[in-house]
Length: 316
Image (tube, rainbow, N blue to C red; front, side, top):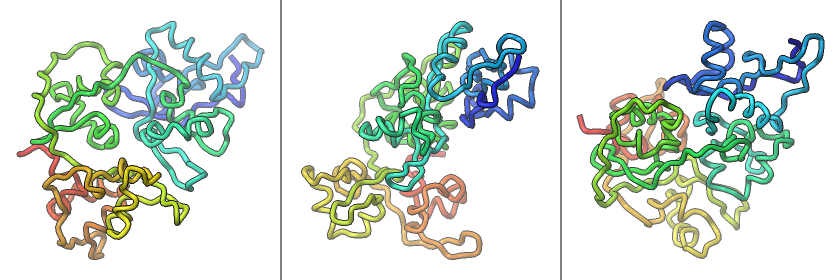
């Protein structure tokens, strides 16, 4: 068939088992197309050109593929099995209003942004294609539960796990409690029921307390968004911004800094070397995009257990 110039593969990633893949990976493996395009991965949703979804009758151009036509491709895929509808846990989209890149969990928590960012004709952001489920570009019946699961000696919930894609590989394995507790975050709805359920965690009191390291809240007098590390460094602003009637979202974004909850996990004042430069935990906490790589260094993890979520790691 003839594929329209506008019928292109997207940059959205998808899961093959527990591995994250993209259209380029699939294009280089034509022997996997049949299974991957219309199997559990539903890659045809994201790779219409590679999967030949664009193809029509000979010598007749196919209508252009655009975000607003994702649902029609869903119907093509649906004939091969149940629809899988997920946000991209690793994907980022641009938010012009705050001049920042954000993830789908940020958008899901802020419905006031949905009307603008989720408009398929809005050309300043790719939120519609990155966050298909949040933007209601598709739907499924897979939802996380309100239950909690053990991470080491503390209890966590699915929101905590959804905010940490780098920890999902560890905690979403079939022998982990989160596998059944958080089917949406762990994509377990997308897998065949070939596992044995694990016991649910006992109803212990949760002992964790963390600020949202990716979240931002509004500071009225500055007319700008700030992160929790900004607030933690300004104790004179905590009472006013953390008040329930402050009009700022600081209390929800920064529960630990605001004193809404507390735990025993704190960073130390120890220094460490990163690429030949002396750094501290405050420097690292301001750069959440470096946590995965930098916290893998044992000396950094020991110095900054709060920033590195080391208090939450299983005991060894």
